[in-house]
Length: 357
Image (cartoon, rainbow, N blue to C red):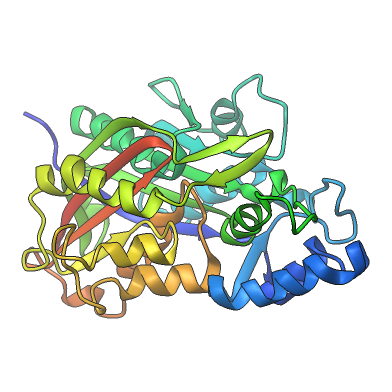
């Protein structure tokens, strides 16, 4: 018989926050082409509607690639996430048997030994299962990685940690010729994607009594894949095709929303991947999901504040529910759903309910 599985803690990590106007000043300097790209980018900032750009890049080094601080290295981020998840002492290092990480873009090239093994070593984790590393699953990577941790805890009486991050700024490569057919598309992706990380502590039921507060008990988690290329990279630059908002939500509806059986009426807490405002708004359409403004408000708020974090994006929204001031009052009647999707197309969904001790 499989264990019940709970999300016991969520932590998120942000680098320095630049305002969107500051980012334009850095990436599209006034000195280029008599300031034409700069002026165009300034006007576009309002249309994209993002307040901050979290970035690991050194402002002084750009257009060169350098970290603003060594603390932004993926190994440092991963180690920090693990330590924060374990800091309250409810779960010890000895209680952790599995580590899964996921990302799409990272700043370092030291790929051997694996980043997951280096994090486990630095944090002195005594894993009883090989650490897992998932790369290039797009913005859905977080739920694929979380699914692995959930499956581990269903079969074992030890905890698992999922660490998700992306450092999209590292591949920023602005196009400055405003007559280039790809200029507008390149500008949109340059302003859209951000840097950030999230850590999730997953536990089986034998560790549940160590926590007093209500926890998210995972009901179901599914992942899927449908071949498609509306989001891709071309010569090192991210490309979003115009039909992305028309194609992806319908695929997510058929492969994630319908199988999960979620509706606006049976789910109270929604955490949707904030791939962009046009895509997010499609989930208000009856044929996709039919959510109202309040139901998408948290996903919308996270997007408007930070943009698209890629693999950890949906966890930033999920964290707002986990740290909600009304959390002590939540019980099994309070149900939630997280949905993410991205390049490939990879996609995933998770449902949960709140469980009191």
